[in-house]
Image (cartoon, rainbow, N blue to C red):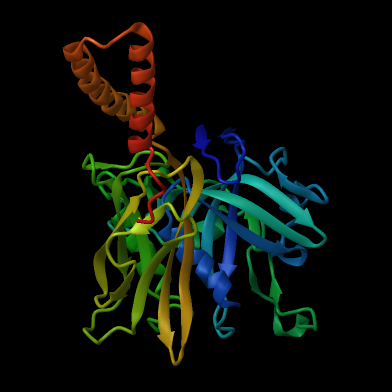
Length: 393
């Protein structure tokens, strides 16, 4: 099994082959950032990357031994090529056993170990589908299934008699596992959005967890980008200078049968690249529990070849401050339209040169050198018109 990884750090793309290993990665509600990992894993399209971070004491020995000391973005680690199931760990309520909710499949692309910290770069792949039923027409309980398939002790509470100052849990946040059934995995599909059912099933599942059940988190999924110029869905990660695009984001608040007003969430997009500007508003108030938000942006006509990030975030008004629900980054490349503008320069120059030729022939004042100089000056004028001053919008 091979997947293609496009460049997210300025390096050449790599083809990573699955090494046959599977792991469960847990992210708990111990901090807002850990919960954001779960929401971000559901929000980003396949092919995008994110990072999970662990400290040594919650890493299984089987996994930690695959790392090399002080190896930054190590592409040769034995962990690279492993498939993992990114999961929400509901362990905030000590009165009940921890529950693990797998939500997204990902592949390890690089690893870093610095001191006692482990950082894993992951490329997102398929969604976990919680709506699949067994032959008895009952939904498969993936919380139980992920425990049954694990080769390593997953997080659990210690017996009260064993509690000490080092914490009250046993088990590890990174556990080797058997693969989940293929029927529980759904490809990301920007053309048909078929994956949205799996996305919603994940949201509905984790919304039963302690950290999400209060409705304080709204989930989203970036459906894709449409090239308005051609009317086609963007394939790959290249944006063309001089074209307009529409990004579609689906937001969803799970497991709520009431019609109470939702908290004030809003979606915001921006980019650090000045060659991208927004045609529509880049900050949209979310007023419904489920809806599609469309935001239009354009790449400037004279944009240069460059790497570009399109940043999106959902915030919630929390008193006078904003609380982040999710922050994500879509990695793209801008491709200039220099070739097209060069062709335009010849067309414009040719028109100017043609006018001068007619005039010279009519006055019978022409020679080879006059033709040559006139043609060169006409082309220079065409270049000036096609590659005019740098636009601000």
